[in-house]
Image (cartoon, rainbow over the protein chains, first blue to last red):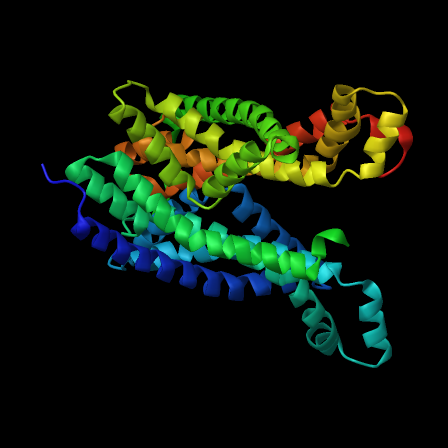
Length: 217
Length: 227
């Protein structure tokens, strides 16, 4: 029986690349969609606000695993059964990330004092100008630390993409384990890969938080 | 799209769904209680323990928080098997969930403990409270009260994350769904139903914690202050 060797390590390293790629897709897609969600959450239109709120509730109230299954089978039903697993996984993680990022960013936008809105209004700015020139730049400062923190969640949750057949780090570990059954060393190695990706992000997020001193407001 | 939705074929399986919900709730409840106790102990150790213990708990928290739950579950499940012990999937799932949630609880509680002003502790000393009394009445209880909303969010996330236990065939709600969809070939419908069930569960759990909070944290209402 073969043992854990360099060829397995190489396979895991490649899979780590896919984990990073999937994380990037989820972050960019989730960021764009989440920005829309954040704006909809602070919209002046009650219906838009309500819809966005319901969206967030649903995304945050269902497990990512179920979301991935729904998208996977939903796409198949819609006739896209030849799509690569990356699409289903990317779509699922995008929706997941948008629900959480949207809510994080809404909090940051609302944390900007109301007087800033009012002052901008006194300068005869339109609502859009007030938002983009006055409020968002300040909200962005608050948002960096929690956003980087959420990146860690995204990277960790890409591990669930294995359920729709996408071979990322966890799935690669499982495949190796199926062939040589040395779970301890394999999954410790997999965990170390994740740690190597996530820990710097966590430390960065903490550093940002300290620098902005957000916690002590 | 010509797909015919057929939710009716899932009806005969309602007993299985109910059993899945029950196991999901049991898993979450056990992990929440043990996680809370363990997390509180870890937070105390991290705040006031000897240096080596502080570092140990710190390392544990960092490792758990920076690796996926799925990998932790695999490690526990297969790891125990390699050690030669026979543990069923549900036990392994509980163990992994507890190990996971202790770390998150510890981090949240630590923030709470750190938010207690030093003057409060000094005031407690002036009133002649002993160390343990100070810890319980002045530090821990107000700290828990302050971070209670964050803890609730974490435990709701835990309930949702328990779905990952389906990957080692612990027969909770998601695993039941996986089995039913392969029996009925009604995959999309099954996961829609299960998604709605989880959504309902997350509301129920949130309300339950809210009610529990009202029962436990009476001090704030008596004083009429925001702590």
